[in-house]
Amino acid sequence: MKTQRKKWNYFRVCGEDDADYLRDESRRMGCADAIAFPTDAAALRKTLAEAADNRMLLTLQGARTGITGGAVPDGGAVVNLARMDRVLALRENADGVPSVIVEPGLTLDALNQRLAARDPRIAEPDAESAAQQRILEDGPALFFAPDPTETTASLGGMTACNASGACSFRYGATRRHVRGLTVLLPDAQTLSLQRGRECGGRGRRFNLTTHEGRSMDGVLPDYRLPAVKNAAGYYAADDMDMLDLWIGAEGTLGVLAAVELKLTHTPELRWGVTAFFPGDVEALRFVRVARGEDAAGNPSDALLPAAIEYFDHRVLRLIETGRAANETLQQKLPAIPAQAGAAVYVEVHAASEADALETLERLATAIGACGGDDEATWIADGPAELERLHEFRHAAPELVNQRIDEYRRSTPALTKLGTDMAVPGDCLEQALAMFQRDLHRHELDYVVFGHVGDNHFHVNILPASMTQFNDGKRLYGQWARQVIDWGGTVSAEHGIGKLKTALLYEMLGAKGIDGMRAIRHVFDPDERMNRGNLFG
Image 1 (cartoon, rainbow, N blue to C red):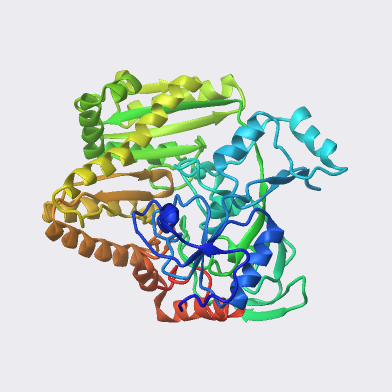
Image 2: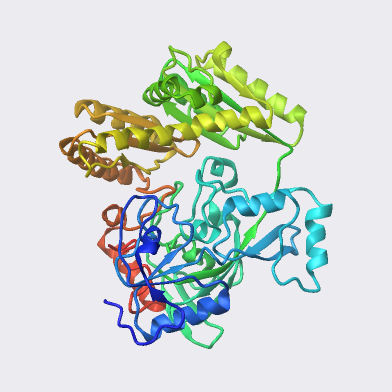
């Protein structure tokens, strides 16, 4: 649908200076006729009303840190929410749990920095502001726990994609922390949703009414989502909280104009351990112990780490090669043991030094029992040391991207192929073996790392030619089908966006996608908002 310009008050023509708003971290490039930068909910409402009058297709954007192309426009107009970045309120709820209400453009690091400084900078303070401020000044330190690798992600974008990261092993994905939403629909009408208020009693049928009086009835899709960490498709369950429908909907059901987020008490201590093992068998055995399972995979006395991350031997060699060639990395990272065949990073959040030491001792015992090298283990018991371990973890994707950039000099069409699949716990070892077997058979360059605590691997295929790229793409499809058969998901944290719609179709089937479309039609009958996301 081409934008038909009548009269624009809130949009302007998209020009050469707006090139950054035509892409995101997926490296996909799009196009747009117009762009708008609303600065508050009132301006956003007027922007959406103007778009409705002009029947504009809209692509919503936050910080554009996603890697599935969800914020990349395919024509129409862009609504960039980055300038809506205020804290609207801080409150302590009836259950004693503190929460913060933010605009969608505020970034994760900006919020946590303000909370750490005990200065949320509440916009338009009212009579309750003094009491709100005392929550921070007099109470325990607070932070927002979900931690995607890219901390410059916007909180609206994190909610729209149900973002998660390493520490989601302990704290859960964004969904667990959302208490309320203010949603502006494509016709500029407003829905207010609160955790526990719009739910229950009707199976998969629902009725919602906007502030302006529009009544909307619908039936949620009848699929059953996989019982694993998941960021693929509309959330749907019997008698569900309707708030959850918008979390992970990737901007296809409305604009998140305000988000209320539950806050978490900041742990007194954050320590980290990186353990090295002879190979994957020993590393995954340690993973099961670290996450509190006995030898049969059943829950036992859990250590409850905040994060458990895995690195295969190819990642270790890639990091060591990068370190040898980069003086900055040499200063940041210690040398990786030469005989290491795999590594596992565990982060511990504790209320006291005694608790942290007890957990560390138990981890040390487990490392030795699982074949790890006590002498080679890295331990971080302070902020500076922990930052070095974080640098090690973050070096992996950065060096992968550098390798791909090298290959692209001779073949510009190349991109990496990165999986985002999670499997049930009893399939963890099978999944890794499948990836490695198939990659070796096709002689493809690759590395594997990821959030192994959640049975979530990132397999990064590094093709050096288009033949290898096509081989890798076929493997990706084969793996997706097997993971679905096991009861897993095609996307555990990155979402679907515009790049993985075929995988979502594979996972939910035609009936499931039709059920999602029926829901979308209730709230966006013309499919004007974020067209191309989820459905293709």
